[in-house]
Each structure stands twice: as structure tokens, then as C-alpha cells.
Length: 150
Image (cartoon, rainbow, N blue to C red; front, side, top):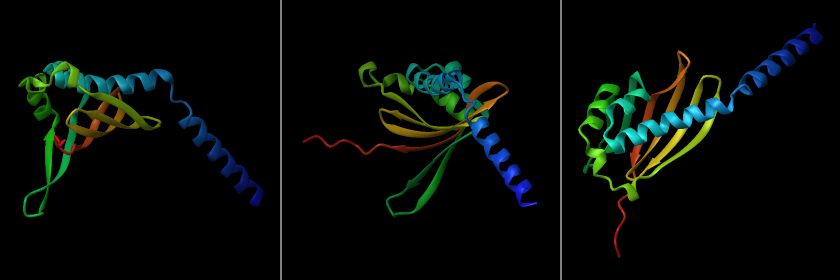
């Protein structure tokens, strides 16, 4: 009985290692491109490019604190983000200041966690392979501290 349990445990461990090892270079490239489509869509004011990176049920959130120290959760939907992109506000960022540094933090199966650093904020993204395409399903973001000129 103990031998059977040991063999089953080894088989499960082997499966877990092999499933997580099946992340391909193509998956990594697609995950990075998804994050870049989001960033470049914003900077270009290209709503179609932005929308191509998002799951329709995306939730983008930020924990914010007011002057009295009270916290709130700001939320933005996929449609709100696409409409905000279409407004062209991101195009106001000069090309030489457009930062879009993508770091893949982890990938397991059809789920990835990605850090995207842009000029004014940092996005922590959950990107999922959905119907064969990598799309952003969650974003937790934070503004960068303002730089003080000396």
C-alpha cells in the first residue's frame, strides 16, 4: 500500500513538472507582445491595439488613498480602458519618454503574471491563454512617485 501511494505521488509530481515545463518560447513571446500591445496601444492612442490585448471581462484596479488617509478601490473595465485609449491621452507622452519595460514574473500552464513598467505607473498583470490567445484579464496598478527637481 505504501509503495502504491509513493508511486502515485511520484507520478503526480512528474505530471506537474512536465505540464509547467510545456511553456514554449512562442508562449513567452506572445505574452510579452500582449503586454506591449497594451502599452503601445495606450501611447499611440490605438484603441484597436489596446482592445486586442484585453479579455472583455478585464478588471483594472488601483488602491488609492485620499488626503484623509482613507483608501478606496478605483476600477476600470475593458471598455473603459479602450475608450480612455481612444481619447488619445497617452499620445501626449513624448516618444523619448515612452517606457514599456515588460518582465514576465511567472508562467504556469495557461496563466502568467507580468510586470509592465510605463513612464508614469507600473502595472501588475494576470495574462491568460483564452481560446488559444494570450489576453490580459486582471491589472493591479500603481502610480510612480513624482520626481522632485533639485
